[in-house]
Length: 245
Image (cartoon, rainbow, N blue to C red):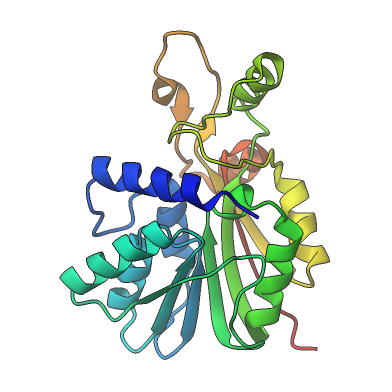
């Protein structure tokens, strides 16, 4: 079981230091917003919604969509509900464990999860839950960290020193070491079919006393370069579906 209090404290700290985001801002949210189909009239679930900004944007962007955001942290959900009320959003929020959700099977047309799976204790259970709650033929889009790039240097330092891993947004209670092919395998073993993969945020190098953001290429306009460098993107996006049969 996750350490709930640690996650509550983490979200409380993040909420106190961040600006409320009205439009997709993080690299993963920007990518997802470009790849989403028309969700109007669909039942949509966001797993690991955090403090709710993206679910609120989804509900505002797609009129008629029934958007539900879930997160393990009660503090995150409390913040999300307050933000939704302040912005008169139709998005709904509730506390759920991504490894064992309370929804009936085949409940949703579309599942979205951004930068969540790398923080759960049993990613395979989460993949199986995505499969369970999706309707046959229902689609999903999921993003995770991918450390097949310079970020592996931080992991090597973590393993060598025993210090907690900090990806740049603060130390989280749990962090999985993910490479994109492992995530693809987890999703497929959960019964899901992956049809498309994309990446961005190419961290070429990490140097002492140097801002890592100065050593990043966020994306490529050229389709050739984007495909060529795809394995090395830090933020990986997986699109797919629950097979109809």
